[in-house]
Length: 70
Image (cartoon, rainbow, N blue to C red):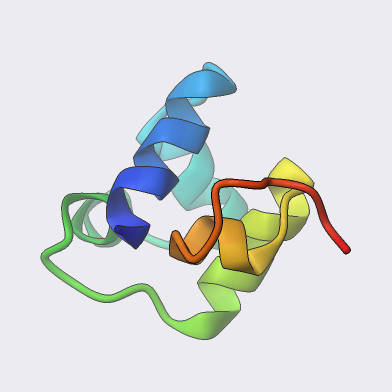
């Protein structure tokens, strides 16, 4: 699921929710809702996260377990 992948990526890169929210120009509570699955992350957030972590959007969405960008 997308929200678990977002959390895992953040934790794997030793980033805080606040740091990622700041990067995305969001309030931390909004970012927290994306990670917890309370709100669906809009496509622009998924794209920005994929760029930040240098992974494919399919990986962020949980459509593949291969993080490589094609």
